[in-house]
Image 1 (cartoon, helix red, strand yellow):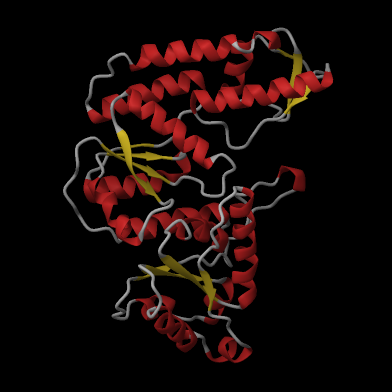
Image 2 (cartoon, rainbow, N blue to C red):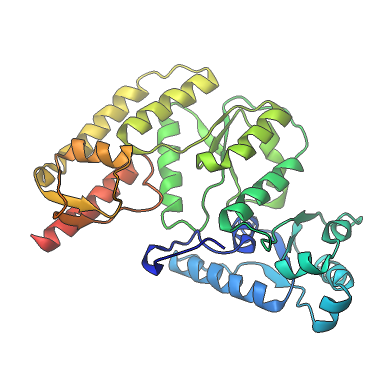
Amino acid sequence: MNPISNISRSSRMEGCTVLGALSVTTGVKDALSIVHGPSGCAHHNFSLLHATLQADEDPRFPRIQSTDLSEDDIIFGGEDTLELAIQEAQEEDIGGIFVLNTCVVDTIGDDTAAVCRKPWKIPVIYLPSAGFLGGGFNNGMLLSLQTIAERAVPGDRMPLRITLIGEKNLEFEVEENYREIVRLLELLGVRVHLRFIRNILTADLQEISRSALNILREPDLSPVGRLLDRRFGTPYLDHFPIGFEGTLSFLNEVARSLDIEIGDAMEKEREYQERVRSKFEDLRGVEVTFERQNPTPYLTELIKMTGLALQEEGIPLPVPVPDPIGTRGTERLLHRWRRTVHAVL
């Protein structure tokens, strides 16, 4: 588990390895996730995922099932129970099955991978998601993306085909961030073809090998980028754009990676950024402080851009984690800061 010393600083991306894995697998719309372990492991995580979806006004229910291990299963082994659960799931209208290990199953030594390797008529993918010996949410997310990527088969690479990897499905502004990436790529005349893994079908998972460029949500997912580069020769960027300068650099990196002309994309984005900056002239000179003791380069850029005065006793401004994406993410944050300032002054 990821330690949280202050509950007010917790986020949706905290929790056990199983939850991190489920945040990936439940992004495959026609797949079932079987949590191999006691019912509590599935119920707890189902509740968290369902609450998140409802908060985001998404009416879907996570497709999660538990093997509901009994005391006898834990004593004598739960492989037969898992096999029965997979057999029953094969009769459902689904495109694939993910099987996630829990700490209990790892402890009793079930060979979950062997059960999943049997010749099932519907694809069954085993994910090593138990965190008993260490690991947490991010480990589960990373291992799941790696395991699923490893199963992809080679395909013909498509020119200018872009894949986003590792969007945080539990992030508050995940769709806003996606739309910002789409907007920026459209300035270059390219578009996203695959979201690996968010709101796609099981059959779409194989499309990862056809990408001309992979863009990772954050540097922590670089192992996935390296894996796909090694297997399919696909170049990757290891981050979404953060801040005004970061957004301009992102446009340059994408154009260079795809070997395309950047055209007037930079000029258009600079003009847009200037319009955004001019909206917040009223913040100039306001004394503020931040929750983060040491401002990141992104916050330092915002201070300079807006003319805010950083003072220890200034108005405390919220600092989201992770940082907002692109120019529009920065604009949303500045609106939030303005509301905070106006509520105090």
